[in-house]
Image 1 (cartoon, rainbow, N blue to C red):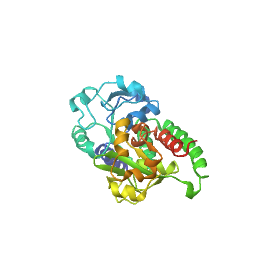
Image 2 (image 1 turned 135 degrees about the vertical axis):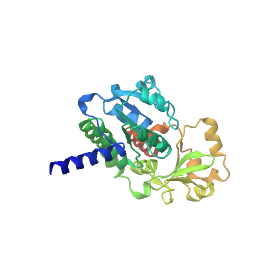
Image 3 (image 1 turned 90 degrees about the horizontal axis):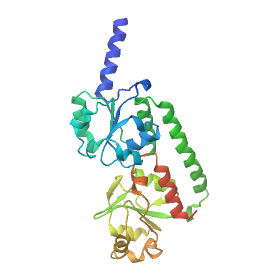
Image 4 (image 1 turned 45 degrees about the vertical axis):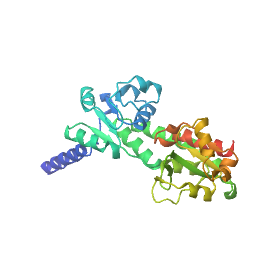
Length: 283
C-alpha cells in the first residue's frame, strides 16, 4: 500500500512539472520572473514585488517594475538571461508565448501559464499565482478588494433603466478596424460599466468590423483601445459617413483612458471600469 501511495505521489509531481505548475513554499522567499505585464501587476498587488528578479521590457507598472532586470521582450524573452537569474518560478501566458513555455519545459524550469480571457479567468489566475508563490491569503484579499469596488459600481449601474443605457463601439485598432465582441475582456468591462456593446453579436472576441456596420448601429459612444491625440480624433470624425453617428455628432469619443486599464487583464481593470462608467454617465 505504501509503495502504491509513493507511486501516485511521483505521478502527481511529474504531472505538475509537465504542466509547469509546481508551487514553491511561502517560506522559501521565491525568486520570480514575470514575462507578461499583467502578471507583473498581479505580483505587486500580492505584495511580491521584492521577489521579482526579472520582467520584460513591456512591464511598465508599477514604476518599480521599470528598475527590475529585463529578460527581453514579451514575444522574444531571452532564455539565457532567464536561466542566469536562477528563478524558482516563471510566469507567462499562452498563444504568443507558447513556444517559450515549450523551451522552459524542456529545460525543466518551474513555470506557470495563465491566460485569462475574462474577469472570472483573471480571478482564477490570481489564485493560481497566489498558490504557486505561497500567497493564497493575499490572493483572496486582492479579489475581495476588487469585488467590493465592483459591487459599488454595480449598485449604481443597476439604477440605469434599459432605455438610458449608452450603446458603445469599442475600437481596438483603426487600420483595419478591430473591435471587441462577445467573450472579450474589454467588452465585459463595458457591460459592467453599464454600456451596451454594439458588437456583442460577433462570433469572435476580437475581430474586424466594417465601418458601414458602425454607421448602421449608430453608437452613442466610441471607446478607443489606444491613446489618440487630436489628429487621430480628427481622422475618426472625417471617416466617410461617420459624421452622422451620434458619438461623432455629440463629440463622445473616449480616447484618453490608459489602454492598460481596459485591455490588460490585471488588478487595475476595476479602475478601467470606473473610468468608462464616469465617461458614459458623467458621475
